[in-house]
Length: 405
Ligand code: MG
Image (cartoon, rainbow, N blue to C red):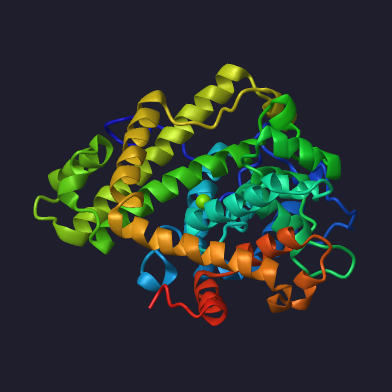
């Protein structure tokens, strides 16, 4: 971390700098699952980004929880605005490192498509439901229940199978590189299962090791930078966190003091925003400096070399540590705040009840889900696709109890 602003050599503004040799080049993409002619005016990654934006799952993100339920306030982040912020941070860093901005944007906008309603509470509930069913299964129970539910895998499922937009194939038929970035984590067991069905090699690194593209690595880190910053903002806005409490987080306190040094009268919302802004800028410069040094040290000169090397997009060790302290603070004081936990409990109940109910009464499912071969997975896909408010309404309709008045 630097005390006095960026020392990184900027890319001249307004120019489209050539891609670095280690960037992902759309002309050398590993291709799509189903061969398609190239578009005349857009690269393969631009096209992926456009397909994501036009998808149904993307539009649903606006009504899905990040931390606060969608109806708790109009100004809190949703999965959609979170994804846009990840794309902004990712592109900004990508341009400076001469990585492929279009790929970064495609991955960033798609990375949360598989999130259930109610954020992690919804995912945990669905995972528990599927695993319990599998544990109790009779011989012959389809093995796919054992996969459980995992949102990164589900994001891939959305773009590979669940979107229905094209005449010739299911899903969005995105390039390998975008799919690789979307599958940011995967258990080894699920990677092996995925490989049995999918020969593209998208899960291979979770079995044999290796790294994803630099653009995918960057989206991971941009995700973390984005939620740490906006959860401070939303936390204070909600009244669950205070600036006084945040004084115990050295990373935040450093920038709050810096803001006050420049503007001694600054207070309230503007002080909060300025502190977060300074923190974001410094984290972006830190990633650019650290990554550039790492690329040089490792001598990486191609996108393929990146895949066999350890991950290189990173914070400096000081910033990594400081960011970890902030994450721990947010976990203790915001994500586990009694008020957040209380809505989380109700959200879990909605998902549990809906899962049991649809299994019991498949007639309540839309035709295309009811008619699928394997009911539990169809139910999981249906629930995962719901927005917060649709899940709440559906729960009220089917169970008659009002959990979110
Ligand atoms: Mg995210």
